[in-house]
Amino acid sequence: MANIWEWTATQIAAEVRARRISAVEVAQAHLDRLDAVNPAINAVVQEFPEEALEAARQVDAALDRGEHLGPLCGVPVTIKVNVDQKGQATTNGLRLLANHIATLDSPVVSNIRKAGGIIIGRTNTPAFSLRWFTKNALHGQTLNPRNRLITPGGSSGGAAAAVASGICAIGHGTDIAGSIRYPAYACGLHGLRPTTGRVPAYNSSAPERFIGAQFMAVSGPITRSIDDLEIAFKAMSMPDPRDPWYVPEPEDTASFPKKAALTLAPDGMMVSDDVAMALHDAADRLRQAGWDVEEVSCPPMRRAADINACLWMAEMQFGAADMVAQEDEADAKFVFAQMSEDAGEVGFESLMQALQARASLVREWQVFLSDYPVLLCPISGELPFDQQLDVQSEESFKRVFEAQLTQRALAAIGMPGLAVPTGEAKGRPVGVQLIGPRFREDILLAAGKDIAAASNPVGVSNPI
Image 1 (spheres, one colour):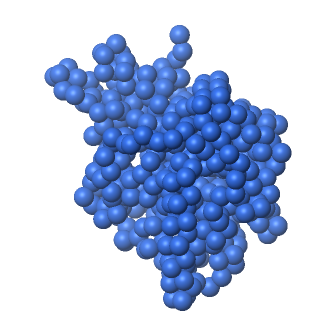
Image 2 (cartoon, helix red, strand yellow; image 1 turned 180 degrees about the vertical axis):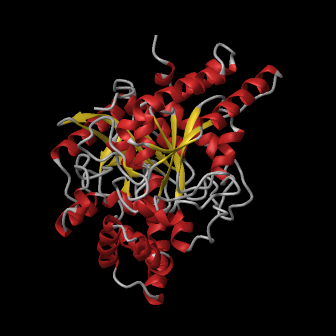
């Protein structure tokens, strides 16, 4: 029989709810796994085992009283260190914020608790959550448990490494330019970037977010199965009045045609043969499951990525440039300089033009996705990168930046995206991205299930 820490979140919730195993036993098994493997990968950087066990005892007590608990009943979850969790530091990977203790839970943390989830630790992110690699001067570097020579992704690299190694069943991540989808890709997992406004967000420990983050930053789950994404998403997306952008979409959704578009190289981006092969394979899996898949060009990605850069750098240049200098971390300074150069100086006129262009792009994408409820496209143009590739040189950064075109673009238009693993190539995980209409995560999850059904289940990896 598999170890408890190898169970899926769906299996854990069912077993705990049926009282065949206690939430305390599940939590302890995952805490033991954390002790065993985390020193080798540095995924979890804030631990509080007694608090986790007390939360598990409360779940067991509630079940003993006959109370109904939510979809995450007894499921071990990790939280990324850039969202507020009461009593813990919201560091965002910064020495400047090492003692920045939150006094309230963020909505996503509140929702996970209300759904019966057990928070067993907080996971690493690069400084400012700014990279597709996970290393900072405060918490150190996170390694990929599938292959320590490659990035675990970023900025939710700690979350993905924790899920892949069995420390937790669900990892909370955030995404403003691929930070859920890319770590899932790099660690061979499933990752859902929800529609903007789907999962409520608010950090009371920080000033209000500027317009870029309000439009583009989201929270979402990273898991080892699509079923686990479904229950995690259901929990995370519960209402919270603190987020003015939250949209209370109903769970019941309309039917949809099983029709998908395949775009191998959006806007002419360079795509490796291994990535193209994975896309063709995923398209064949969809066809075998009854989908009509047509290879077509999708709406513009580069203009959307330019808008992402403008909105994101407006946020950084206006609100965080001084902190970048004060933090004085070489990698963060280098990446910030490269991204600033790409975006140029963002002023009032360029910001207004970006917002104007965004409306036209969203319209064009909505029309396209009304014809094709699913777009199948690359997550990255390349297989997962070697560790620290982006800071080796300006040329290396540009290579990474170009390969991540679709990740940067999607955030600007606010549509949901799903990363689905399809296997390995050259000893590295590979997978595909699905994009769908706003608030139709159900379509992506249905398509993701059909792709995943043709693969071996995603298992736990012992760090190598």
